[in-house]
Length: 367
Image (cartoon, rainbow, N blue to C red; front, side, top):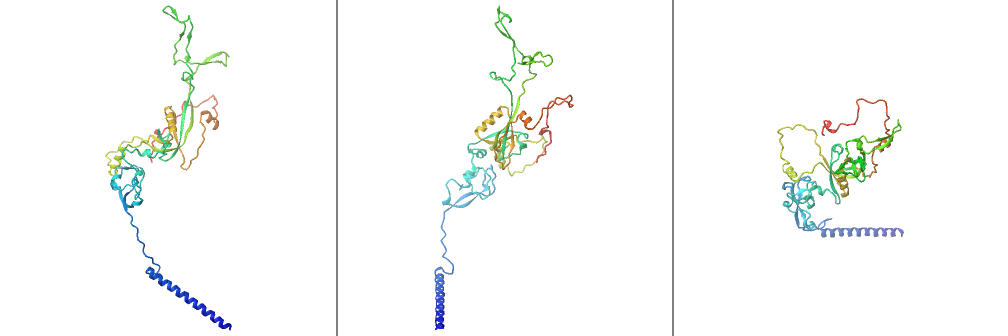
């Protein structure tokens, strides 16, 4: 009895397996008839787009170069994605313009990449909104031997000579003095005594300088002391701008010079005669990007006779430093420099001033 039940169960399992296999075969046949083959779907129709041509650079275009037809080409672009006024659609519209940036080959030309005649300078496009440009007259000693280049960040330091002035006269102290004669002591002019007479003075004479009374250390008698020379100004140096960007080192070329260089870029220059060496030449100026207020500060310092110099900052340093104004007293105190003692001997020859060799005293080998 048990054996018959076991055989019946196996038959049922075989029948189910056969039915499942038949159903799977039927599914494959239906799918093949519907798709024309196993796993192949009907091809989807390609949507049609209206295409227009846009202008692209066919080769590298350096910044400032006047664009000509031989550096341009065109490609097809979907019209639905074209924003009006963004891309050039005709090469003639871009010819004669100047590149505001370095343009790589294959890059589509946009109106913001070029400058047309009369639309301003390249330099103005490198100045952020709200900022201005200021040019400093520099030398190798004041411009870190011209190590800073466009895009570098520098500090600006100023050194001033200060002296004491008379508040009312706004003239240098010490004041000159003049004698005054009271009535009766002056000369008679037209039969009348002058009520008061001011004795003229000669500024070149030391006795005309205002002095002071001091007691002589030997006789203990009062003596009148006058200055032996004009007042010596006092030097002070301080950082006036912490972090400014260099716009350009040297002079900006005129538009006519840029066009001439571009037109003659491929013309070989034949040297007919080697000019005589006249020494190294330097750019002579550095143009900085500063705020309008800092522009006024630099103008004032330059006109006031301050000496301005640059310090090159690290490319990865954005810190703001607090610097102390430097005077002779500051250096003597912080660097522990004592005032020299008065000795009964000295060096020979006599030295009254210290002079370091300047850059022009050397033959500089330019890299």
